[in-house]
Length: 376
Image (cartoon, rainbow, N blue to C red; front, side, top):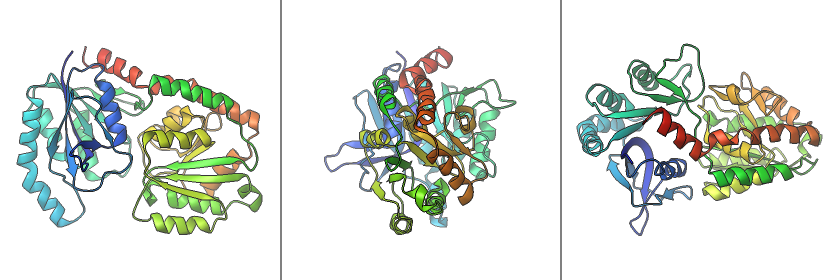
């Protein structure tokens, strides 16, 4: 089998015993890539902070972590630190990629502004780029616009979220993998048994606790529901962390709806939240197609999400979820009301549709596509 070097901005942490753990979803994806690569070297950032519960270890010695400086930040000091460390970062990447058969670069990211040109213009190594963000994002940060333009005007494969008009041939529509084959089967069993009953409805939010992810709007929309509508909700489960967590908890108390702020959870714990929830709400300003949506759908959660990027290509409004156009408090509330007024029969029809689509989000499906469409 071939070998692979991945370059990303994925957060890694060192535990007290010296072992390295990294951002759970990315580490899990890389663990499964060992099905088609003999060894994987992951060049990424090591942070000197306590690892969150969601961080995971690599499951094989065939994955090697290589540290690059933890770059990024809004201050002028942070920008100067980036400039100072560009040569060092590129040298580490050069040495890591050189012995591998293929590379993968995960964009968009701050370091992409200087790493992408290096990989495109100065490296002849075979590989591909994974653009995990919103490929059609309006008002994107300048750094993201530069990276997207560079990716469109080079020849190596680029995997993106969604299918778009005038999409270059080398830009390939790929689903973001997030499920094992066993989890897909578990999801089918959970979904078949899931019922929607008045007073027993659970709703979840999974993501960073910040305005950009729409948590402000979600809580405000819940507060705008009528007393009768609020009584249908047993609990709202919030998974994630952020600087404003305490403020959000205080805001949630004013809604008279039970909230559980669960913090950062392990992968299995998040899946347990999906199993008891009937809907996942994510009225974010911009997304690609986040893994939390396809994971939640697998376990019978109807998505109530902003109609951005490729969301509308997987979610048919009113058929297998609800799309929010022009995200506002009243539009989020309107979608919540539509969900709450669904009969149990209609709810079950909608969630069962999503079980048929789970296979395309499995790691095995993703690996087969990488093998057949990129490295073959």
